[in-house]
Image (tube, rainbow, N blue to C red; front, side):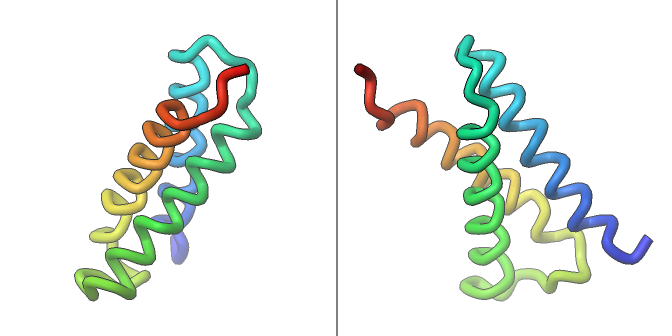
Amino acid sequence: MEYAEIITAAVGALLLAAIADFLTGRRGLLATSLVSATGAVCGWFLAVRVFAMAITDSWAWVPWAMGGAVFCLVAFFLFRSKR
């Protein structure tokens, strides 16, 4: 498959969002998936554009994307507004 790494990163970000939503007991999957996707894009940007450690055709940026998703999800649940 030509875009297997991109599909893997997108599914991984969605799975991380679902796990985070399940662990926190919330029902806001849309919010967590948006945060996770944003973090995954930021991780890709760091690996490909900032540090130039990978290219988009390789698998080396996928762990960076998952790390960015996890980082953003942790920050989201730490700093979100609690009413």
